[in-house]
Amino acid sequence: MCSLYKFVSCVSVSASVGNMVLISVDRYVAICYPLHYPTRVTVRKVNLCIFLCWLCSGLYNSLYVTNDPFQKYIPCYGQCVLVVNYILGTADVFISFIIPVTLIILLYMKVFVVAVSQARAMRSHITAVTLQCSVTLTTKKSELKAARSLGILVVVFLTCFFPYYCVTLAEEILVNSSSVVFVVSVFSFNSFLNPVMYALFYSWFRKAVKLIVTLQILQPGSCEANVQ
Image 1 (tube, rainbow, N blue to C red):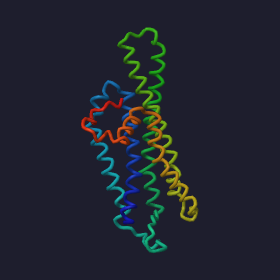
Image 2 (tube, rainbow, N blue to C red; image 1 turned 90 degrees about the vertical axis):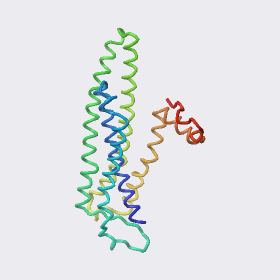
Image 3 (cartoon, rainbow, N blue to C red; image 1 turned 60 degrees about the vertical axis):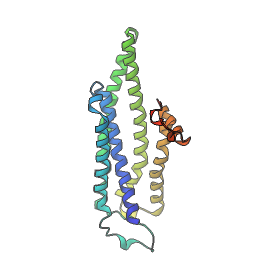
Image 4 (cartoon, rainbow, N blue to C red; image 1 turned 120 degrees about the vertical axis):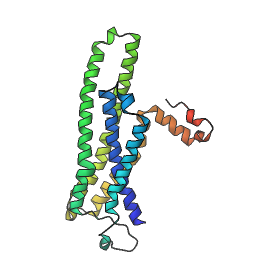
């Protein structure tokens, strides 16, 4: 049971970071290549990427669980303790955090540059738009708003995860129980913040939650409900 807990915890962390990378790629394509977005980002490709993200996370983190050499560190029977080797922990930080975060930052820097140029173009031509152009501008504004909202989600996500990886990099003698409890609490707090921020940013999320809470999702035809 302890091994299962360790496995699920590690997979959840890696998959969360991977999902943030996928979200960044999605916003990058939507903002930088809007005309190609419908063909490059399809439901089938999205499902495949999400599946591969969780599969790779499971295979990668199984290395921590299959042959656990740290059982001797368990102080009492029944206690579940995860002791991270410093060398393996450092490698994990680079693979699971630094590389993905670098990719996320680069993508959002590109999105920011394109978004600023589009905003300036819209302001300079706002007086000469037709109805068709107006619809196009509204679409672009919605895409920019979505990118900004997801950017806030990514910043909060990284803020909550950063202390955890700092502790992973720290030597064992520099880490006490209080710091571990703190970083785990901040790390877990992100799971609470995500639905709150989604509810603040997206009306469709609030409507979807309402359908679930009121059990309307169990009614026939609920799949056709309009949540936009």
